[in-house]
Length: 483
Image 1 (cartoon, rainbow, N blue to C red):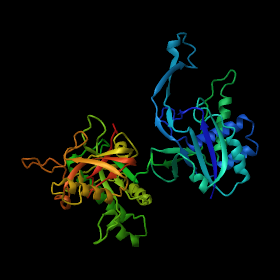
Image 2: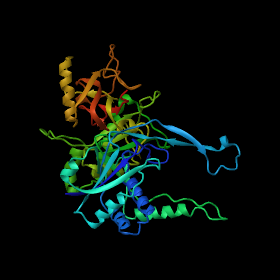
Image 3: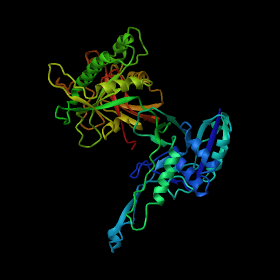
Image 4: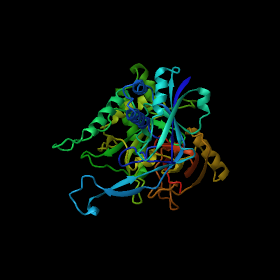
């Protein structure tokens, strides 16, 4: 396979690009930002209407590139104050200062980045794109001075390049980790935005608004530093007045059960597959019933999310998540569309909460981010009894990790006490026989439960659910600060 490789090398080890005006930092620099740098360089040299400019129009039609970037870490946030350009009415300079926030990213290692597109041979367009790469003067902000070059590589040569590999994953429904990529019409849109900037001032007329680039796609990029988590859909719980509904976290399996029942009814009525084939799928994948002797069982998980992430968080249930195995995104999104707006029905006929599909907030990010360090919010139900023997506990935890699909090397500690405020212990009862822990389904009531803190070798993406109760809200993990 042939690859077009465009390499950009910075003159410094700092990069200031942001995902939007107020942050957060953008890393790695998006393919669209490289495309902007290529268009700007060609325009500066009067080459936009030449074969070099035509090669950029060809480049925007290619699939998103693989990116090889150095390891990086976020730098300190710095706010500088400069005179506001439209504040000349005020004579006092201090009264017309405006804050400019800088969030640099520090590169560790050689400050260079490679973008690689799969192409069919060394075409004329590819050769012209290489010429365009040599016209780059910066990548990021204007202070991120850089120079570029390009070449045609085969697979073996690509394998010799150094850097963290960032792979495009089109169709992945993630909010964090989306990078802009050019698409058909991006170059014409950039030219239009540039003209609006040139023509923003006309004598005797009000200042015109400068257009911003609008024609681009967003694609999730995954790597060992930003892994992909399981497909999921999160719903907020609302009452009939559309206010927040909260449920006791000790009884979270009730919410999981109500969500499961709603999913079964929705998929029986509106299955994503051929109705003749849907019966077995609903029974196994949606309801979670496993055939005797079946080991590789795939199913939806219904996971209530305790409210955590703040020192005053009460761990009550205000959200529920439906998670699916990898490769089952289509079925998950079909189910999520059917459940959005549905009212759950508890036993006894009382009015239950209404499901309201949400994207992301401070609580869900605790469960859906990526980190090397994770800890249990609800206790993990181990697949067996440890007989109070540490050696046996370790074996059961390792078995639970393997059953949950976690193969990466890790270290862990365990105990009975929770790691998050207002969550409950792994014990079911206290010394006086009073219930102190989470309610469990009957088939899990006699198994050993522990709270666990895991440190992985590389960052892992949520959601993470471990143990025998992972499909109903027990054994749910949240990301922790490594410090």
